[in-house]
Amino acid sequence: MLSEERHREILAEVRRRGSATVTRLSADFAVSEATIRRDLDQLSGTGMLRRVRGGVVDPRSGERPEADPRDFDLVASAAAGAKTRIARRAAGLIEDGEVIALDIGTTVAAMCPFLRDRPITVVTSSLAVIRALAGAPAVDVLVLGGILRPTYQSMVGSLTEAALRQVRADRAFLGAAGVRPDGTVLDSTASEVPVKRGLLDIATSSYLLVDHEKFPGSGFLEIGPASRFAALVTDRALSPADLNLPEGEELEVLLP
Image (cartoon, rainbow, N blue to C red; front, side, top):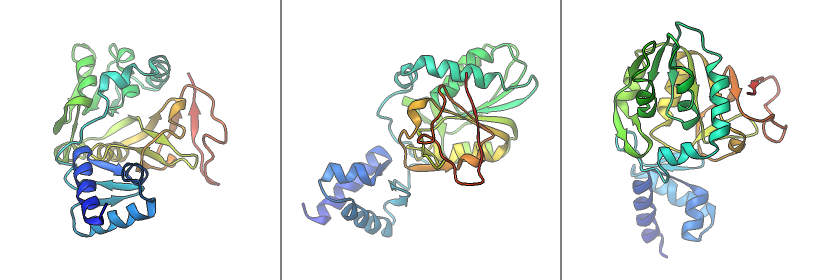
């Protein structure tokens, strides 16, 4: 395949999915990762794509949400028991009267049954969280508007990010696609990462909710280092192969 043809197909693929990794494109086009990196550098130089660590994103993706390969309900049903245990432990960290921010992850949404009777304020862009707490008499829900990602039931985009900057929360609870051994927290959805970073910025304390399969998991877009979180809540004890932070960094690990 000629490079010009490959460039057209790469561009079409990224615009369809919203993002792509070097590894995935290398396999799809049966060329080396070095070749794909050169392709992406050339395409990003034209402004048609934007280079990120490990891959590329559609620069329009913040205003045109990418499609999800699996919908929210399907993801939520996977490892449901572990997610419930993590969610219960995380909910126990919250004090009555606090303002908490919940992201769009399925493990975070699993906290909702444990929050329905708590006198708290919940800030979220997750439609799953909104539905779960809409009838909770003690909970005030502050909804962050934006562009709808229908398959993952979330709001994203510049409106969501702007609304988030007007809020302050006592605690934020986030999910992720993967955690590298050095503590780098990653996600795979370009339109969601700015919202996750915004949650870290507006919360006094932030907590990462991930099950053992997220070590290392997946993802190529950095949400932030482990040092941005007060604690990590997971379902199993971690080995040094799972998490081995750089010297001088610490992260409390909470188990159910």
